Image (cartoon, rainbow, N blue to C red; front, side, top):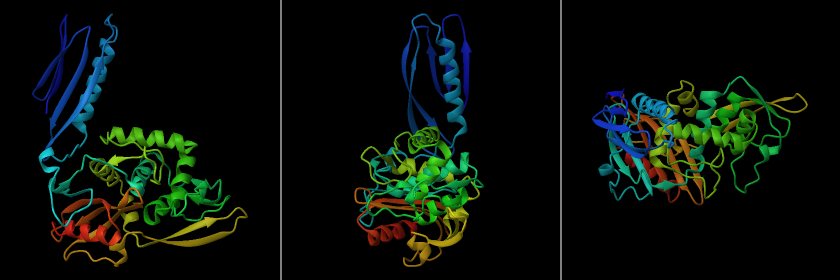
Length: 342
């Protein structure tokens, strides 16, 4: 992949790979860039570049194009080719699913990975990414309200009390292992002052890593019609989480014991069990497959969801997901079928 720019008196010429275009002093340019990546397929992204009639914006536009091109050249946008996106398998009735060999960058199965879905608690992967990338796990966090103010009926809660003090590391573990919605809110409020400001950061980060079809309205995934993503975007988010060494040890846990100091300074300990039935052993994995962990999700509108990180007997790494299965039995049966593709 080669990127360059050349200037003359009339134009600035940009070359990205085999693509060449000129930027004039008066221009409204819509450019679709197709990138060929090592071991990957194509992804099209549209850049809209605008110039003022006096030509004063030309330099800033050039800087922007340079930045965008550099961004594309350094990021790993492993994508599913559109021809692979509509695979059918009667054993996978879920609305969207994929199975990707992350070692050899091969798509083994992909169904509707670019279609809009509700992510439920798989949302918490992006919340976790913000913590891992920008947070301090040693921070002490004071819970402002009982259950961090989460009152949605049926929401999974760690049952934090107003005045409880916990570490950010504890909240991260409760978020990923137990899927505590109150943990998600406590993280958001501590890091950025409010859920609204935290969500802005979530959406910025999603766009930054290429998850451009994601729009979140909260840090936990409780249903909101304007809270959505795609299976492919969740793959990108999950893959980004895997870059942090603390992530896999957390999602591998069957139980996590939290230390909580109440408002009177009294320490209590509470154990939180994973929501992942493969880790619990209540659902079997195919022979030779090791499930390291992942993230579950479930709401009435999202159905049952699960994204996993696993290894085959020969040591290859896989990322797989099923979204909107009709119940947990169906979810784990479908996921076991995907894991058999290893």
